[in-house]
Amino acid sequence: MYELVRTEGFGQSEAGEEKLTDTEHRALVRAREKLTFAWVMNSGIMAPKVPRPSDGRHGYLNCVESTRLGDSKYCEVIREAKIIEQYMNDAICGFKALIDIDWEKHGFCQKCADDRRSAWRELREKEWLNLDEYLSELS
Image (cartoon, rainbow, N blue to C red):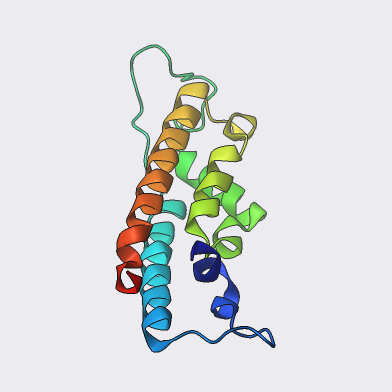
């Protein structure tokens, strides 16, 4: 069902496709709304923040997070890649795309990059598990 959730028009615009029932359509709309909310709240400027650690594993001199430019650099990277728009209906793959970005290349130290990846990995797993609940009307 996730393929339908992430497909424009829930796959109903193609000729010859079997039409969704009202119950199926409501469940897909609900699932997309929930996933889109999770995506918007955790991918743009509201993305998981990483603490500025003082444990010695943080590249203070080289990391954009240490200069307080982390948020603006993050926004620049995702804006240039058009990540938000590209995955608006596909939060699960969107979080994977964020995980796969080479954040170190963009000035983030290994610790900050790993912390962000870990947060997105957890969100991705959580939303995948929540998908069953979101589609529960179909059971």
